[in-house]
Length: 392
Image (cartoon, rainbow, N blue to C red; front, side):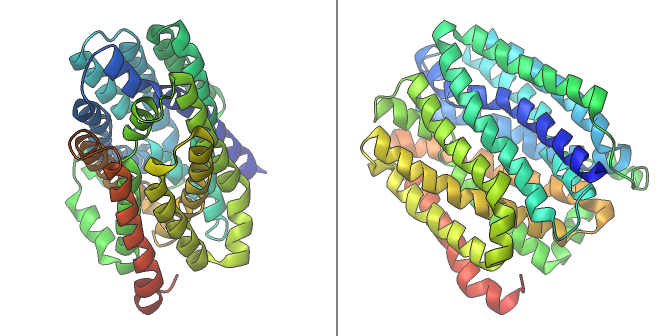
C-alpha cells in the first residue's frame, strides 16, 4: 500500500509540474518568432540553453538526492522552476528569454531524482512499469499542457507564463504536505556530492558494460527526439499553417498516446513480448514516423504519424530506463539516473542546436530525417549487437 501511494504521489507531483512545462512547448517557438522576431537557429539556442543547464545540474541533483533524500531536492527545484516561468511571462527580449530558460533548466534538473524515487519503491520486476509512470506523467503533461497553453495564448503570453508558474507552485505544495521520503540510504554517500562532474562515479558507471550500452542508446534516442523539440512547432506554423491552438492539439495527441502506452500498456507488453522485442518494435516505429513527419501534408495525416511516433517512444523510452535502473546498485540509483539524465540533457542541447540550424539553412525536413537516421542506428544495434554481446 505504501508503494502504491508513493507512486501515485510522485506521479501527481511530476504530472502537475510538467503541465507548466507542457504549456510552453508549443508556445515558446511561436513567441520567439512572432514577438521577439528571432530566427529558427536562435530559437534552437534558446531551447538548447534549458537542456545545457540540465546537463550540468542533473548529476548534482541526483547525487544530492542520494545523500539528503529525494523530497528536499524536488521541493527546492519546483520553486526554482516556478520562478523561471514568471521570468518568461514578463520577457521582452531574447536575453530575458535565455535567462528564463536557464532558471527553468535548473529547476527542471530533478527528473533523475524522480526516477530514483520510483526505483526506491519498486522491485526490479516492476521497475519498467514504474518508470513508465514518469513517462505517463510526461505524456499527460503534453496532453493538457499544450492544450492549456494554446488556449491561454489567445489571452496573451503573460497569462500563459504565469499559469505555467502556478502549476509548479501547486506541485510544490503537494510535495511539501504529502510526498514521503523514500531514500533509505541517504547520508551514506561521500562528501563529493557537491562536485559538478563526479569523474569517479562516471568511471564506475561505465565499467559496467551493459549499463554503458543502455545509457548510450538512451542518449541517441534523446538526441533523435531533441532535433524536433522546437522544429515540430515551427513546422506546424511555417509549413502546415497551424495556429498556436492547433499546435497545442497536435502536441496533445502525442501526449495522450504516450500517456496511454506508458501509463497502462507498457507493463502488459513487457510481460507478453519481453524487453528485446519491445525495443525492436519501438525503435522501428520511431525511425519510420520521424522520416514521415515533414511529408504528412495535412493535420489528419500528421496526427496519425504522430500517434505511431508516440507509441514507439512510449514503449522504448521506459524500457531503456528500466534496464539502466536494473543494472544499477540500489544505493547509487540517484547519481546513476542523474548522470543518465545529464547525458540526455546534453543530447537535448545538441539536438535543438542542430535542428534549428538544419531547419533554417538546409530545409525543414532535415531535423526529422536526422532523427530518423539515428533511431535507425538504435534499431540496428538492438537487432544485431545486443543479442550477441548483451543479454537483456
